[in-house]
Length: 188
Ligand code: ITT
Image (cartoon, rainbow, N blue to C red; front, side, top):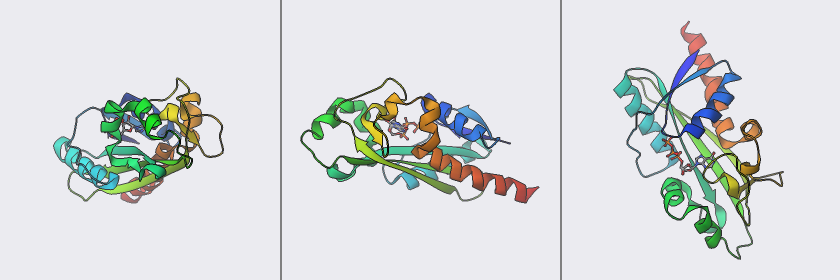
């Protein structure tokens, strides 16, 4: 059983492969590029999956993710890519200077589409806190800032296998995998 993952982010591919292999789903990777709307993660994933499936003529998944910080009105949220490339983690830490409520969520939405049907979407969320400084060399982007609930370490300090046990991506990909298995079986 396999599926094609459209993304420009190699870190996501490595994480998703680790997660989906537990469901015996082989992930093929293609950096096709797709127009990313500015909007809700679900809309971006829906549109991206539909667009890529049409272009390729095969079923695909895409995934849109972001870091949502409560005290900042859930910023950077859907602006996570732009903010990572401009303010970066140092900029986020400055915005969080003297902020007591450091609650944040990583959210992930997987979009699955076939060329001729409407897309399906699958959500995953993990709660946690923004650290007072960057920590750790694992993971990517916002990982050194994010301390998942129940832990004293950031995602940046966790090995990929550990992050993969309970991350936002684990949860969205797992939701997708359960659905996909039933979907494939129901067509056999
Ligand atoms: P795509 O090609 O799949 O869109 P992307 O890197 O642009 O890859 P997103 O738009 O989904 O990915 O992510 C928005 C930002 O959040 C971007 O800067 C990512 O690097 C970052 N991000 C996404 N998932 C993350 C994770 O698990 N840990 C840390 N940062 C993450």
